[in-house]
Length: 198
Image (tube, rainbow, N blue to C red; front, side, top):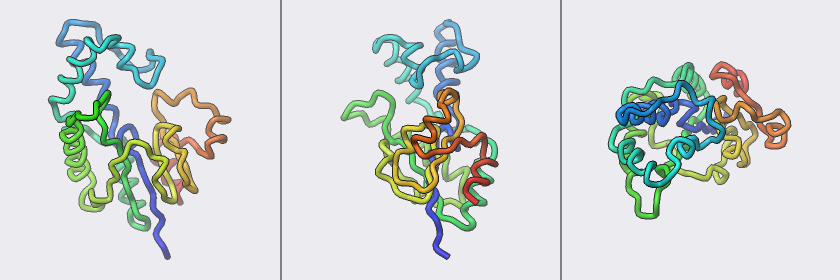
């Protein structure tokens, strides 16, 4: 039987959000108020609500990219076991952005960040996942496979038989009508993903 190709986003599907805790650590170092949750933010790119000018944002980005922000991160509950189980019968591929936030054409910070991400993948998903199956890409509409699982509905526009939106704070207001228009369904957790990909 031919294996299906199941594609998964990495950040916010397998690995939790890195930006929020590092943002709070940076703010605390400056003696500024921190945030209890992301629910107070109105837009996906919540950094623009916290750092309102480039002069405020750039020092934070320098701080953020000077660390391995993947090191020590625990995977999202059920992700590792789910990928291992699906990989027993199907081909697993990870599709993840390789462009750092607000990157210019000569910005090489992505080299460090992408290396850190691959190290996390090898540390947490080996030996059942081959990191060479990872696709480094920003626009995911050109990828093809049986399914795509992502936390951003806009990343589910490609030609997939199954499109699964993983829950995140920024997609909590996506309506059933919007999901239907995109041909997608919403999973609540990794147990739901396994059921949807039976």
